[in-house]
Length: 315
Image (cartoon, rainbow, N blue to C red; front, side, top):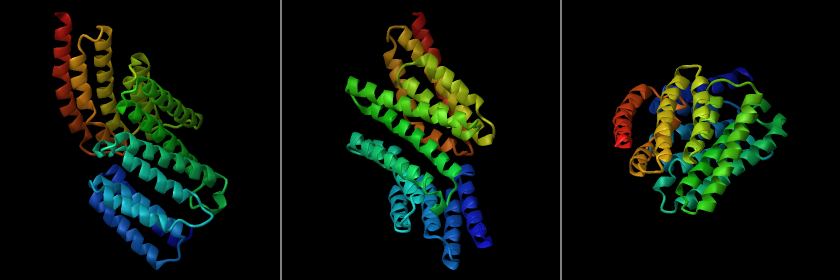
C-alpha cells in the first residue's frame, strides 16, 4: 500500500474497532465518514469506497436503522468495479445478515430467510471468484478465504432459522441437516488453519446451537464447551459467558426430554426467552461492553426457572 492507502486503511480499521469491539456506533459512523472524506481527496480504487460503505452499514444497522444500512449497500454496489468480485461478495453478505437478524419482523418469515439464503450464496460465489482473481482484488487470498469461512457459517445459521420457523417436520429435518453440514464445513476450514479466538469460537457455537435446537444434547454440550475454551481475549470471554448460559439451557431442555416431555411448558417458556437473545449474542461476538452485566441478568432469570423445573421433577 502507498502512504495514502495506509491512511485510508487506518481510518477504516479505527472505525471498525469502534463498532465491533468498543460498540460505539455513533463514533464509528463518524470515523467512517472521515474515511469517506479521505477517499474523496485521494486517488483510490472505487472498490475501497465500496468496502468502507459496507463496513459502515454495520454500526448503522446496530443503531436500528436497517433502511439506512440497505441504502449504504445500494450505494456501495455503484462503486463495485468491473472485473472484481470481492466487494460484491461483501455487499451480498451484509444484505444476508440484515435479513437474517430482522426476519422476525417480516410478515413472510420464510420468504425473507430464503432471500437471505440467496444473498449468502451470492456472496460465496463472488468470494470464490475473487480467489482466482486476486491480482485485481483489494484483499489478499487469505483475507478472501476468511470471508468464505464466515459466509459458510452464516449459511448454516440461516438454515437453522428456517428449521425453527417451519412446521413441516420433513422440511425441518432437511434444514437442520443443511445447517449441520455447513457448520461442519466452517469448522473444518478453520481447524485446518489452526485458528484460535473469535472465528473458531463462532463456528463451534453455530453448530452447538444447531444441536440444541435439534435436541442432540450431548453433541451440543461438547461443541458449546469447545466454544467456551476457544476464548482468548476480552471479547471472546464475553461470548463465553453467554455460551455457559446456553449450556445451562441445553441441560434444562435435555432434562425435560428425559422426563418424556412432562415439562414441555417450562422448556417452552425458557426457550421463548432465549429466542430473544440471539441478536444480543451476535453482537457479543464482536465485543459488546457490558455483556457480563447482561449475562448476570440472564442468569438471574435462568436460576429460578431451573430450580422450579427440578422442583416439578421431584413431585
